[in-house]
Image: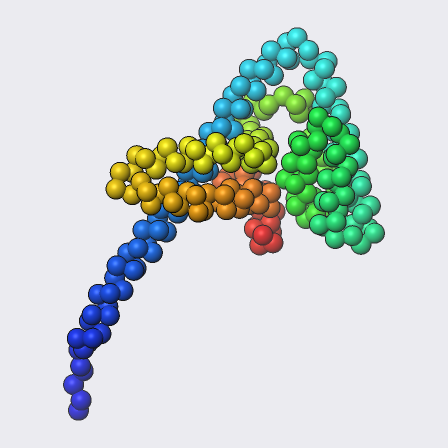
Amino acid sequence: METAKGPSEGEERSCHLHLPVISQVTMNSRLSFSLLMLVISSISANARSLVTSDVFVVEVDNKIQGESNIGKNEKLCTICEDFTSKALYYLGENETQTQVISTLHKACSTLHSFKQQCITLVDYYAPMFFLEASTVSPEQFCEKVNLCGETVVMQLPKREDACSLCHNVVVDVLIKLKDPDTELEVLETLLKGCSKIENFAQKCKKLVFQYGPLILANAEKFLETNDVCTAIHACKNSQEDLTASMLADA
């Protein structure tokens, strides 16, 4: 009976040679993950600051210009119902989802100062709409996503409404991600953060320049194609099936 042989001297040397490589890969993965977390934290912090400042502005506007806000709400509701009706029509004409979104983007261009917010809303809500297109009317859909109804949508939600607040933050983050200046701000913040990592500062900065823009682009795509608010349980469990379908399609 043959006895089991231990690793030869050459095999032992090969194992030792691979250990630094594995450690290097592990280190890169950890730094890349840390970089992703920093990107998300930086953008989220900016979005939360924007939400906080908007709360103050909206509260003042509500006291002085309540009727104006209601007018804006009605306009946003009308736009939602109009665009949803258009989307249903185009889907009925057998246009693809990409073609429908492209057509709606062109329609957003006619809204001038509201153009960028319109595009962001289309990108964020379109995937949800396509999943429910055969079961809801334009009016029902716009009410479901809180763009129509008795409440003044232009007013930010109350603190206890975590779901609506989350959706507002996501829209704000998407708007910032589409702004080229935001990328520079985030990269600058990340580079400053790298300086605090002492022994890995240069490696960290290299990763920022190499992967920062890619992560930002992927973050935008991820937010547009996934219902993040339900995934983090900021919204009710009744929407979990919708999120699962969206994640499966992503």
